[in-house]
Amino acid sequence: MATFELYRRSTIGICLTKTLDEMVSSGILGPEVAIQVLIHFDKVPFDLL
Image 1 (cartoon, rainbow, N blue to C red):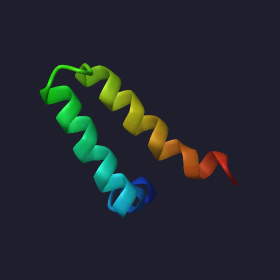
Image 2 (cartoon, rainbow, N blue to C red; image 1 turned 90 degrees about the vertical axis):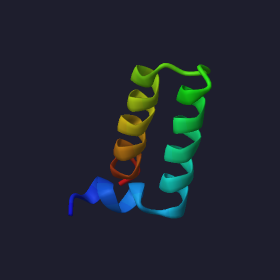
Image 3 (cartoon, one colour; image 1 turned 180 degrees about the horizontal axis):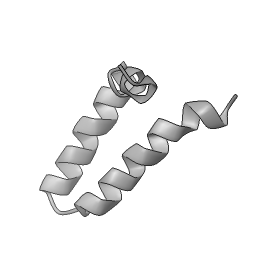
Image 4 (cartoon, rainbow, N blue to C red; image 1 turned 60 degrees about the vertical axis):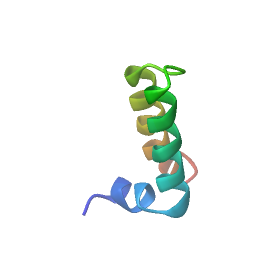
C-alpha cells in the first residue's frame, strides 16, 4: 500500500473525496480541479516533515 493511500483512507481523506465527488457531480468543480486537490492532499503530510 502506498503511503498516500493511508491518508486517502483516513476519515478526512474519505470526506474530502466524497465532497469533491459531489462538487464535480453538481458542476461546481471540474474533474481536473478535483484531481489537483487530491494530489495536493497527498503531498501535504510530507511537506510538514
